[in-house]
Length: 583
Image (cartoon, rainbow, N blue to C red; front, side, top):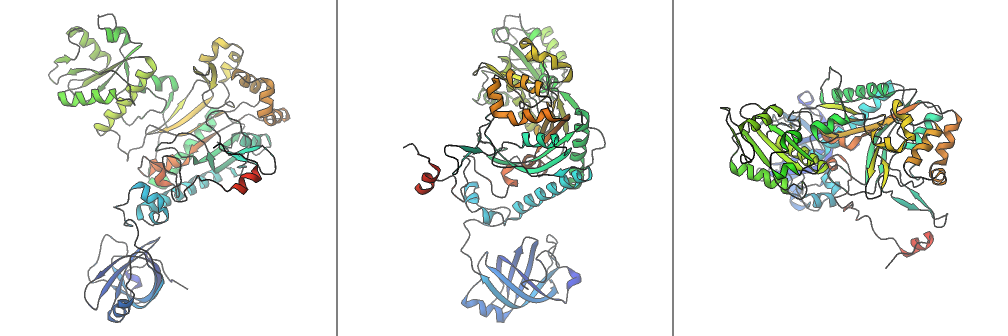
């Protein structure tokens, strides 16, 4: 037996016991010619080892280096100088026997919380990065979230059912990753973007409560909260309406927070329509940790001879609390911020509402004090506030003000990562118009049902912009952590949906004939939701990047720099697959 205890286990009650430990050398400290201290680390913690003269002499021939793997045997003793910052800080091991199990090269970065390794270097040597306590704690949190979700779903009668990874390509939405089939010439599998159709088929099969913690794959551009492969908590229920789904998975979210963070939500999560989210926050995943709602100034601002406002489709404002004393330098910095290509505005207008009630703006030439007072009232601003105004094309301007609101929230310390404000966003549009494709596309996916009162509008093209989806997203601190819908379960309605998206009957039957056929054999009403497991973990862990909570993530270019993948394959493999690469 290599070890009788772990390196995080021993306490004062173990003093006097003979033990054996095994792990990695974190640090060595030579006190004198006869005394050497070693910090031994494993997954569970760190224990200090005390090596006396005999072992120190033994190590003269083969010194211990960082990350050496060793086994020690010895007696648990009370430390003379205790370390209150370590769980094992009251004891140490007086080592009587040492075995070096494996040596180690000097690591390319320090394996500690404040490491000197950059992202790319740590990703290249991810197996070393995973030894760091900070990364270990992230993976432990991920495991605990996984276990909490499974425990909750088990108590609610859900069954964990696996679905295939090699499926048929149905390119709607993000791009598929495709896999060539050696046994079927010139044919390909796709890796699933989600188990959507399979979980619907399971509802047809009578498995009325399904879940799966499942890998999904999307070949899309990456960012901090995206990876080419990611994990979902994927769920589906039969004989349910929207209210049943929201209540069930609000319950799961509350359970996870209580288990992981010790936070209890005693009230129901607020609900907000998509229309209100866009109107007051400028996006469909509002951060409600702070107010600073968007206010439409268009009607009040136009017709006063100020061309920037008069030519705009939208004039929109926010009131930043207590910011009336911003300096010219700070205002210029904000103006430069909104002019960045990522935001795309041509400028920023401001109105100072002084603590003494005075009014001063960057457009005093066009608006007298009475007009400025009108703006102040519209914005519900208080003395000491700073009103920030953007104007331009409606979609771009609303999005820009949404980003400016979040930026001001960040600068004012209103986006505390230790404060959690979840909500449901409901009543999404069923369709959105893709200008570049000159057609309607599904905002969620083509299996989402319209609201019951809007089903008849599916026959009227002029109504498509008004049709609301029976869909819902759960949002946490400005990040969508889950989304789902009540599904279409009748063949006729599903065929109408495919037709609305521009599919011919033959095309719909070729891509989804299996699902349409299943609907003819007694499909129950059903709906579901999928949580972005990686995103949920990163929010619970206080990080903006999901990579910190994935054992072996890809970099921002979608590459695994540790494995050097993707990579070329050998010519014999290409020949077997009958693939010819372009030069």
